[in-house]
Length: 117
Image (cartoon, rainbow, N blue to C red):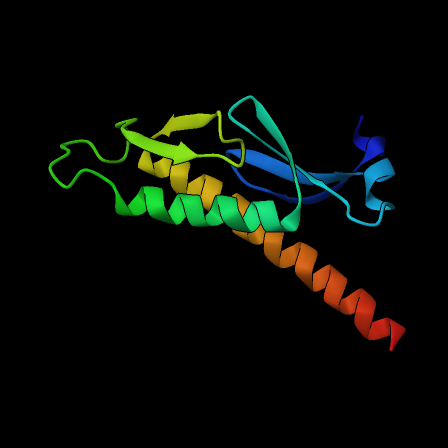
C-alpha cells in the first residue's frame, strides 16, 4: 500500500498523504487519517477543518478538572453530518496534522509554480 501513496505529513495521531492516482488530477484531494477515521479533502476543506479546530479549542470548558483527557470538545468536520468528541491533546494533534498538511501542500504548489515561471 505504501507504494500507492505520497506521504505529506504524520504525527502521533495520524497521517496525511496523496493517493498517487489522485495527485495527478487537476484538483487533487488529500487523504487525512486519524483516530481510525479517514477524510478525503481539498485544501480549502482542510482550511475549514483547521478553523473548526480553532473554534473547538475556544469552547473548552474553563471549569474542567481534566482538560487534557476530558473528551468534552466537539469538533465539527468537513462533513456536516459528522462531529467528533475529542480531548484537548487529540485536538492539538489534529490541528497540527491539518496545518502542517496545508503548509506542505501549498509550499509544494508554490515551488512547482515558481519553477514554471
